[in-house]
Length: 341
Ligand SMILES: Nc1ncnc2c1ncn2[C@@H]1O[C@H](COP(=O)(O)OP(=O)(O)O)[C@@H](O)[C@H]1O
Ligand SMILES: [Mg+2]
Image (cartoon, rainbow, N blue to C red; front, side, top):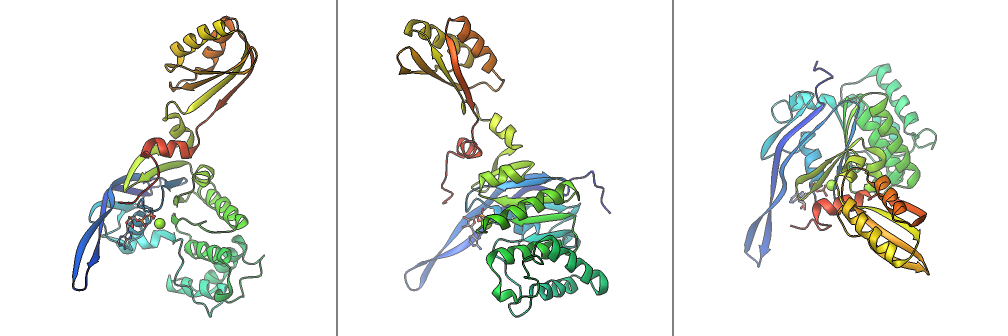
């Protein structure tokens, strides 16, 4: 058994290129390379949810498939609790639960519960232990409460299918979970239930969870740490608040002040000397002005600015600091949207 103090997932320099053939007329086709991963490295520890956050085509599913032994990398390594995904695939499979956003492999003519019993048997579970585990999981995932456990899979809604897929990933009670866009397209109550469960599984049961999403709001809710992935590379990494702090100039301080133009001009200069960027000034009413200052420094300079403005002779009526959103952070690190390549 591997030590719990070592990272549950260790990924180093993963590269993967897909080759596709482009038809060029009737008999000619041209090979085209898509570099899906261009050297991806990260760790996931037991007890933490790590988000792999990036737009469609960034390389999230490719990363998950390699760690779950479904796809071979061209180079680089991935270890799950110390076992190599290429050389020790069988050991890796014993330790992981996988949930892919497009769930295949369930049997339409079996009920949800029968599907779980079937997969449990396939994983080498049997008897009372298997029945008890299936019972626990249909309860935990709310399938019992929805009276869905004894309905045929082919009659399931998307939300029920997702709940069943997560139940299947948890059957063996694996220490490592790989969840690929687990809430994609789901109704809000199911998405919320899944997010709650994910955080509980990490906090209370110490599971290591890799959670992919293109949804910034969700990443911020669920993840202890976020890896921003763009075009096959991790472009930034940290806790949501750390990532925000790494993006200078995105925090905006707005001061509404009473005073005359001359005083404001001198206050503007003082603020510029503190924050490094000239603030914008707008008159909102006669002798009421709004000063908008981007905070370029990472330290908290708000107190300093307020003190300076007050001693310049302006009366502060209101002040507000707006934090950047994760979306702002993503645009800052990637230069924006399109992952086409
Ligand atoms: N089987 C495949 N054949 C060719 N290209 C692929 C294949 N799977 C993924 N790709 C390409 O690799 C890149 C990364 O894809 P993927 O890992 O699925 O990204 P994500 O999950 O972040 O949307 C994309 O440009 C995608 O079009
Ligand atoms: Mg994907």
